[in-house]
Image (cartoon, rainbow, N blue to C red; front, side):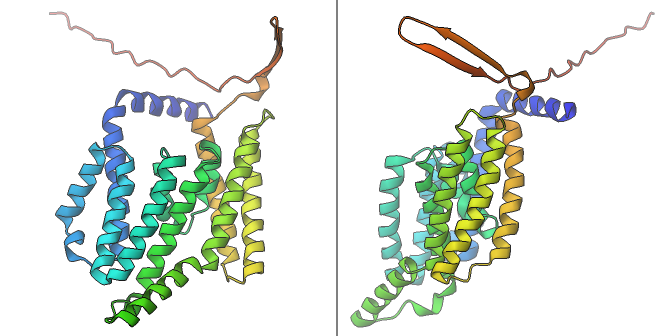
Length: 309
């Protein structure tokens, strides 16, 4: 355990020392992965799949604020869909506009949630997001995670129904619009997952905010069980045929990953808990103080030995 704590301190010091450069690096990598994912799922416009364009867009995201990763990714999605069918691009633009209005109004700092949700979705472990944002975010993070899920299902829908779009004629275009809207809004699996994720996120947030010992571990365990239960209930009620074994395995893996997050973000020593009481002219205070687990890293000393001549 001491070795892990020393490693944690080394990592924290390293990040603080090189924070500026590391921020550029993680924004570049996140943008690159996001754009490559979009190109692999859609990829209808050859210009946007060009390596030079992808690298330039990723570098641009690295030097701009994090929200530009979401904006650039949205432009890539719209560009590919425009190349496939105009009606798909128009509907996607409307969806993105509505999403951005809500996103920038309620949770503009949750860029990672919007971008990472589709990435984890296609890695088969999207269950990381409600647990992680419940621990690290706020109830408003429900909006960001929900947007990420909508984008994930939207990419899946368009990539699976390529031949259904791009028809000519006014009547055919109107029917195509109706088909797209019905396919996106009427996806019961998406609705079930959004509801389960939202409930889980709020449960995790409420529990981790309590003052009970090991609140983060309790929040993760409770959230994992709630996520499985509500997904199962939604599957039964809506007949969505969601893979329950996949949900269980993915949730367990996600819960284990959250223990790593807790180690770096909220590692407390409950054996040294202190309860303090004091007062002023208007209030009487009851304070519970729990110290963080810390360890001093050994300092390296270089001893120079001069040879006698």
